Length: 500
Image 1 (cartoon, rainbow, N blue to C red):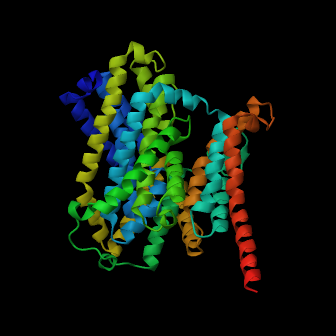
Image 2 (image 1 turned 180 degrees about the vertical axis):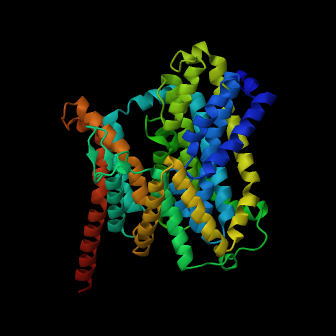
Image 3 (image 1 turned 90 degrees about the vertical axis):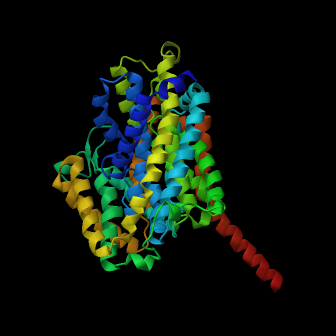
């Protein structure tokens, strides 16, 4: 209650509103994201009161989680990595004329997932942080390997093509100077590839520019999508059945996303994807995810917002950042003279509880700001293709160039778009490639760390109960389709023999 008394002052409410608005804008622009947004805003907060400053930064963080879904849903250009999963169902919904409902679902489920994460942080922050410590390099490597093994099977109609896309993503992620020995790999003596492939040009090319090519080949007039000339908040609201269908999805995705968020280095992308996997496996409409279902949008957005809240548990309780954004915030806390760790709750309770209570405030401000701009955003769906094609192309070029101020990234983006266009035509899914590209560096680092700890002994993965359990799940996951096919073959033969 003392924290709420601190955060509910006029200056702090204004700071939360400004931070949420800026976060939505930053998150919606491909190439920026929460890490860049907070890094740019951090120097401006040094002259503020620490509590006011962290409230603004926290609201910006949540705003970025909301904003990242906008360009993914409307333009098929994810604003950041977690929004890649959102685009799987969000953009098809826009194509079907339900872009407003997709945006509304994304905002409401983000709010629910974020609230679940904040409540868990409030009552179990230190406990969650210690649970996160149980996941060392071996456990994190096994968890990410489980995610990689499930990507190809779950995304796309053909598991074999999904696995091929996953392997391509893994190979692209290994380009550049290796983290283990510092030697260049697959650079072909090009100085532009020494730092590896940038994620933003890759995702903009494979999602955004490939969509430009599709629109050029098959121009679709907005009136053909079943869109009326009058699209506003009323048309975007969910009916009672739809609202009740996304509530359980958002709640369970919020819990899972929060637990993933506390793991060091796991991040919101892993939380978003695993929540989507859970919904595809246990959800009532799991088989239809990826074809334009609001449940898929809800699972992804609730998972990544809850993971964002979960990353604060190890940050505040142990001084260990759980994500790149949390690492920037850690630098800000230390600049203010605060030392995150177990004593922070005792020595600076006003700051800790002011921050946690401000997360409730920032989440509310972010969802209100997000809902307010839906009527303006859905108007984008009515713009003719002749105008949208050059606009999206310019956004793709500017977004790719702005990452490193390099024309190489622009040419790479164009090439990635052409490749993605032909992959899509051949029914090879793009999402597994991008998700594998994001997860592989963390897998490689964790795998190398685990083997360094054990002096090269792979038994470290079996001595850990958590890692051994995850490896068993991987084995079952891989063998399940083979066992199912064998069972169906035996069953058909049995029915045939009985009929004869």
